[in-house]
Image (cartoon, rainbow, N blue to C red; front, side):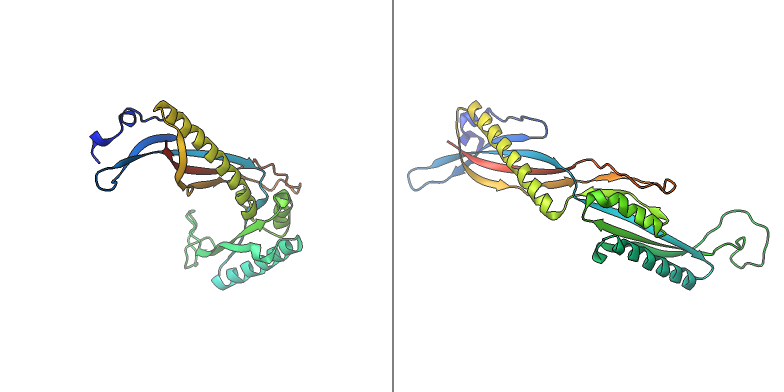
Amino acid sequence: MSVGDIHPDMKRRQLIAGTGAVATAAVAGCLGGAGGGSDERTITVSKSGEVSGEPDMAVIRAAIEATGDDQTAVRDELSRRAERLIGALQDAGVDGEAITTDRFGIRQRTDRRPVEPTDDPQGTDGGPTFVGTHAFRIEVDDADAAGDIVDTALEAGADDIGRIGYTLSEERQAELREEALQSALAAARTEAEFVAGEVEASVGDVVTVDTDQDRISPVYETTEDDGGRSTELQPDDVTVRATATVSYRLD
């Protein structure tokens, strides 16, 4: 279809409305039967909807460390301490399948401090030669219990508590996504009707819908060992965003 085949109204209208939302009008040419033809005008609008809700799930990262002059000794120490940590977490109500290894490693220590000459073949001051770390990812299905689980991990010997992520369970994500999509679809219809009015047309049936662009924005907290006092966390809401790209027939 050449430029000259485009409907006059459509040639002079291409509107961009709303922050982050783009509405475009286009004409799709259709060849008719012998002796005639027809043009089908369509408009495509992309809009996003956002919905926020309280998180119902937390992800905690806790790590234990061990040092020694032998890799096997370090590995055995990590194993012993990991068993104690996992047992304490399970006693606190965490499902065993929700505790997984996030990172594990044993490395040879490099001590860059100047030392007096010794008989140590590693060239260190006689300190530990190997450092081991076993970091765990702990999923908590009750966001309000995250602080208690942090306390349990510290009391069981965790050396480090990483950033705590608050998010949504799959069921809750699906609920909020549906609400976000409803908002996006309503906004798309409003946008399409506005653009159609500018070209003296009306919005007809939906031709295509694309809703692949979804996003969830978890929130994070950090915590430190504060001398034995209980850990209190106050997470923000989690945001779910859904985008709908809809093509309508113009009448």
